[in-house]
Amino acid sequence: MISAVQAEDVANAATSFLKGSHVNSPQGESVGNLRIDTTIAHPARRYDYFLGGKDNFAADRASGDRILAAFPTARTAAMENRRFMHRAARYLAGQAGIGQFLDIGTGIPTSPNLHEVVQDIAAQSRVVYVDNDPIVLAHARALLTSAPEGATAYVDADLRRPNDILTHPDLRRTIDLSRPVALTLIAVLHFIPESDNPRELIAPLIHALAPGSYLTLSHMTYDFLPPAAAVEANQVVNAEAFHARSKAEFATFFDGLELVDPGIQLVSEWRSEDEPESRPAPIEVGCYGAVARVP
Image (cartoon, rainbow, N blue to C red; front, side, top):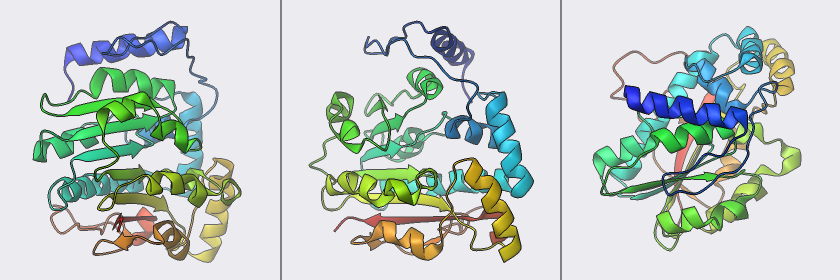
């Protein structure tokens, strides 16, 4: 839960963006005259809608409702995807001993956020968040505050320009790429069609990681839908800029890396032994997840 002061900070920051005025980071950096186009659905705000948040607009809700019509358990999938992120982060910060995280496709902060999870295990952990939606930036500046022993930073950038991410001064000030880093792209790559060469987009990011780093991915799939339902879902979901992939296609994102046990699983099943409730059926989730080590 966030405090009343934090909530007011978020509201003020978001309002400033909507008016096109300047917003300053905690470091005093101006992020410019940015405006939010509320007429076009954005993945971060649609995901917020699926998670029951309030930081979304009519276009995001309309897009979400079209997806829910074709895939009624999309909210279940979103929740399970987020739980997977938490479990993977705990594994990386705990068992794998990773102290640096680069999270691309951050989305609107929903507590516990990645830095809260990992800093609860190792307070000195350092986290860089990356997204390209101004409203995410507004929330990030207000809420993504580090434990005193660690650090967080937010980079306003797009996965389609990986070098902009890797060379950004805020990233360079926060994490040391010569040491192991956990790169996380949670529910991101299914927004990149094959025509945009998603594997080539993430290749510079992976190549920039030191040996002993890790890659965490999750990705939607139709593998568990009946063929007719998959065709219907594909017609709707493609119109909303989603691109589902099979398990075999998802596996190619990990070529050259060492998958961590239990390998590629539904996000609801990956190391889920300690989840308190029964696991949803595969058809309700439709999302793969995996963690792999950079040799």
